[in-house]
Length: 276
Image (cartoon, rainbow, N blue to C red):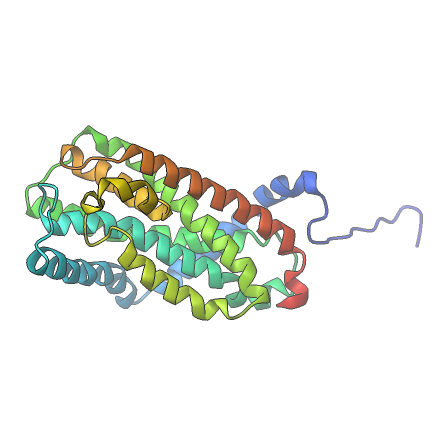
């Protein structure tokens, strides 16, 4: 080898101080992966769009029947379908992003084993795809509010904050499961069970205001309680009250889950190629 020749070595986690700079360099790959999955879901088919719109709509109808018509639970002064759908939006964004991110590394095993890039872009792209579904499903909420003649107040401008918290929750939980899923494939079975259980213990089909005051803070240990209550507070305006201690607790838990998820993902990232 001549003295003028150079050797370029590419390896996972090549330098801690360059990690985030390298991640930014892979931003085009992030959007490519997200765009690929969006095209697969929506291009030249109506099933993807129908599923994105129909799934939350059917869930909303079932919850309205069970909790409003049969259980006669209060609706905070708004039509019950709007109360439910304002909660379904963040919940399905979280559950879809969480599940998609958790399974993303296994689904892209062929790409991971062939070339090095920051693996963080793979679960992140899955959450972005879920965000697109979230935006499409939001059209139903707009239609419901128009149908019932319900208009939000200025609180609606705080909605991006709660969307960010929902994104952080999906990303944090997704990173944990994605990394664990590579080593322990049993998590692919556990995740759907956790998501299904979470739907019923979170205040989706009912208002968290029915929880006794002395249990509200404990109930907020479920991070999605604060996220859902925040969405309702922003969308329903003066008809919804936000339990701030519970929201702050949920916010702290979401941030802890996000940062520890990133830390654990980075710690195990260099072993993915060997295991997967």
